[in-house]
Length: 261
Image (cartoon, rainbow, N blue to C red; front, side):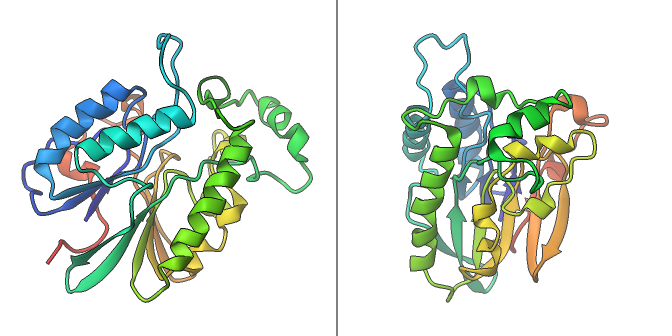
């Protein structure tokens, strides 16, 4: 099983692999469709979860859907290609000599990754004091929810019982565009961007549900870390301007589990 966050390489060697698209494939429905047409013939199965860029509604999209309507549209597009989404039953498949549960999540963020002395009502001003503001504030619409916070909490409340219902009898791979742990959000140049990086509601999820690996992106800082005996893989590709020279196709992919048996 391989994981990439963002645009993926055109590789022909992985016909037997599963590929996780962990969000920020693009910014429009057309971007996602282009990626799926290129990638689905090259992998046995693709698993997708959205990033914040995917959920943007650009000013140029005069009649574009926004909020949950755009998310639903992307889910339907993925299903038309046979791609698994957070709305589908969690897949169970053989990887190596074990059966593993694959759980793509869509949880968003709620501005709770902030110091304890910064109240929620002042959180945005706190970030703006250092000239930091996520573009989501202008392009990621929460409709029909009143706010992204409300949407995030609804997603958590819907997702947690689904994961709990699966038990912990099988090793599980949790996939979410945003980090599940606040401690993983270390952004030296823009530390107050943490507001847009997750929710404290997921602080113990890695210790539950039989979790073996958590894969995520969003931070643009690739890493492998271990917390409470669970492996966390940050697999962002980042923006081209953040690359040093050309990136070889293989370096864009990270093996999460041994290939399917």
